[in-house]
Image 1 (cartoon, rainbow, N blue to C red):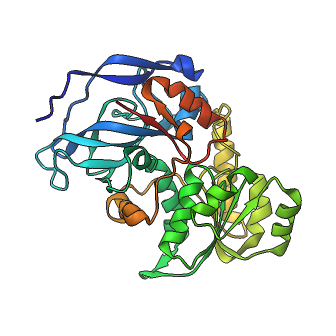
Image 2 (image 1 turned 45 degrees about the horizontal axis):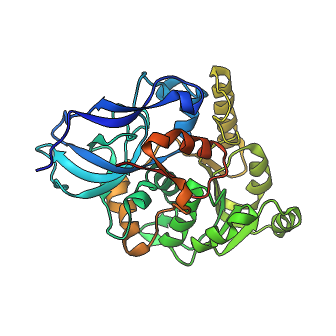
Length: 358
């Protein structure tokens, strides 16, 4: 039987501001305990970093659901081994290797630590495929949930259990969410025609994910030629945000197409301070697009945790889709988490950034 220590190593958010000052490594944080018969205690092997966590840590997003009690262990995406479970947990056993995402990255059970408690009824949790390393498994979580919601659910890519052939454009295809968007689009139906937009240095990475064509947005002539050809898209999935892409690309949608976004009308929303006035302005912009736009418009505001175990996780079997830790220098130690936050803050990371936890 695994001995569970009273304390653990973890990183606590102690203040808002610079990542180096806000995120403090602590070797004696109390180990969380199971409080419900449907919970499991997971010994974390790896966790991933998402833009939303960096935005909240910076102090730019402190309203509503993003409010955090300090000090707090944050983070949502994890992979690890179950070391204890509640009496009513039937789908998992002690010793199972699992991966998934907490319901909220700022709840009571953050993952930037050696242990976390997962509520098996409501959080995303599934057995980890043997093909995935712990680091690659941790790269799923919010990124794969967001891509699935935007393309499969909002895009209505499956109707009456029939996988219709679609033409899909992914903006920001080399990022954490976009890289899963490319894979999901091709995995759902290999006949889907999928185009990714990214910078020149990431073209080969996006092609390796299955994209049929990749557009370098920094090549003005090539990008303009792409726009002028007016390829009719069924789904545009925007992982960058901002009105510029919306104005350029929304006209390319077919009549019943959808402009689905992971970010919204503001490019990299949350990279600068969002006050109440900014939130109302953002909400008004979204409402206008929904009500008066030429096509359906949807921003991902909720994640399909209830579909992770039975629909999303099985897609990782037999490399149908794979983790997106593309570079070795995208893996950081827990004590160096501030460096991982700095990298994701640059908006130049390729694929996902993960934390390896001893």
